[in-house]
Structures are given as structure tokens and as C-alpha cells.
Image (cartoon, rainbow, N blue to C red; front, side, top):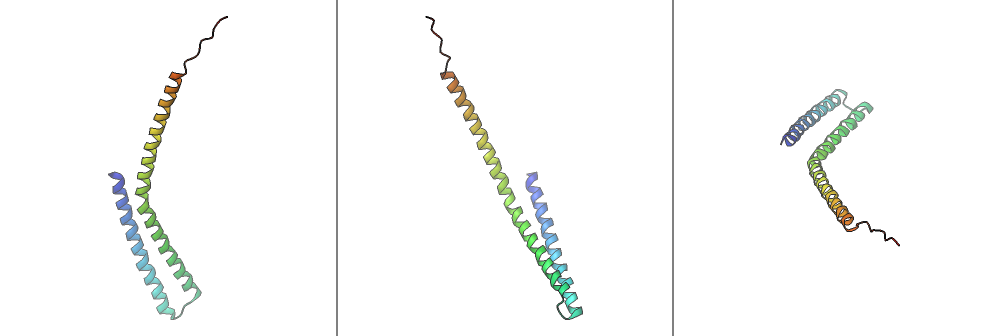
Length: 107
């Protein structure tokens, strides 16, 4: 339950930071455009960096969404691996029980 709680808090923080960056980034770029009245190289660079940051936030959000699924899959695989190890141990015991050392005959 605690693990799920951490994900909810992280998602909320990610959402707040993403919205804040989106709002202030747009406001900053718009204010620079209103002051200059034209596109400059610095403005184009800042727009590109702002969009890149938004893409990173989207990718991070997608990664967070798939993370709980990965954890459950790893747990399932770990459980299956433990079952396989137990089965191999039982098979070894069974084989060793069938292979009793043959006594040498004296002539």
C-alpha cells in the first residue's frame, strides 16, 4: 500500500511541475515576443528547449504509468523462478535416490 501511495504523490508532483513549466514557459516566450515583435534566434532556441522539456515530462509520465506493471511482472517472474528451483531440487533428489551406488562384486 505504501508503494502505491508513493506513486500517487510522485504523479501529483509531476503534474504540478509540468503544468507550472508549461504555463510559465509559454508566458515567458509570449512576453519576449510582445517586446521584440519578431522572432530572433534566442527566441527560437528558447521555444525549442521549452518544447523539449515538455516532451521529457510526457515521457516521464508514461514511464511512471508503466512502472507498477513492471514491478508486478518482476514479482511474478521471481515467484516462477523460485518454483522452478524447487522443482529442480526435487528432481535431483529423486534421481540421486534412484541411482544407488552399485556394489562391486569380488571374484
